[in-house]
Length: 514
Image (cartoon, one colour):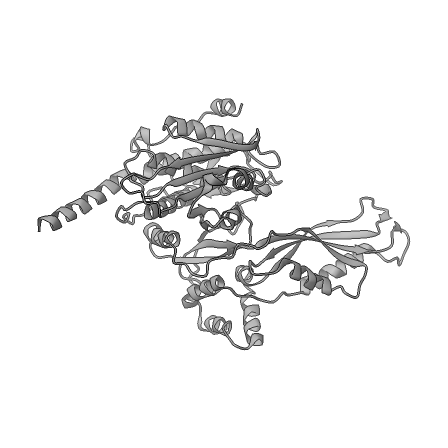
């Protein structure tokens, strides 16, 4: 009986310690401060100079006496790695590390911004600034988790690698690809948590549950140049064989072309999980996906693909992005071209895909297709089941953070560093904040994140980490402790000052950037 009482008391004490250890109000303020400071360090493509943000990060780490290393192929293009070691009493060689990754470069500044892109603007409960959702929010959250766990009062049963990278927005040649080529021994992890997913708000009519979309795989990136030849000359000549008209006709053929719909174990899990939330007609259509009759299965897939997001899960897609021909208004060039940006399913054969497109123009020698950028094959395949420890930690954290929510694994059409991690055998999933449908998202003018969404992303990420790397009891499920949009976010007088760093003044940022 004494033993039972002792164990019970230990459990109660551990729960009590957890409640004290993870002060999410303080952590939220820390993450918010870091995000503001990182936004105000311009790391936009095409010349991001990520070392400026790296300097901010290592100054934070120095205050907490955390060791770090910088790796770079060029002086301005820094990558930083910091490692928290497992507790000696809990460490097990079988428990390979968890890797938390965030890239520090941002997309180029697009036209249309009404607010300064490289200045954090707080307005109506939102934080505006380039990188606020891609991916300085991830960097701010990971940095917050790193400094909190570095206190040592939470015991870790596996190492955690914190990785801040360069060059993600332009191919990762100076970032994670370089790191794996030259310093792969530093990235030996079992699991990784990255960007790529997010929250989708439920619709009472179509999807009563909110969705946490988990990126469990990515599609292949491919660029193909579609070219059409004609007669050049002065534009006053009528009836000539015009290359632009030919290109337009070729694009119309491409628009009408539909590659076969394909299914993988992951996409079947995807549709199984949404099945209970569909109406009777939709459920009937979903059942037909399993038909032994290929014609019926393809017809069902065609109906399902009327939803743009569903379509990305089951077929290769083609999107024209750049048109080019002449530069003078009174002159006809003898060639016109269009870039076709293609996103292929992981199980697709890229060159077979090109052959199938080329066959559409087999009888027209004036139309050609040329591969500009092709994916590296073999391409990492998504998981066939979801029984690994990280995915289980994600599902548990979703309940802890949001209560009732559908955890939906699937493919994201966007490219990310996850491809490189998966190529090296690291089980990788992508999470994220609310996926915005009406602008203000990644790569868009006035990119922003609400303070509540940043808090939710922080809490979800921390809960995932705790579930995977500690033996502590479940964190209590609680309502987010931040104000609603438009209300004051001040926690003055409630947050211990040693829990977070004050916002760095502009003069300090300028000094840091030198």
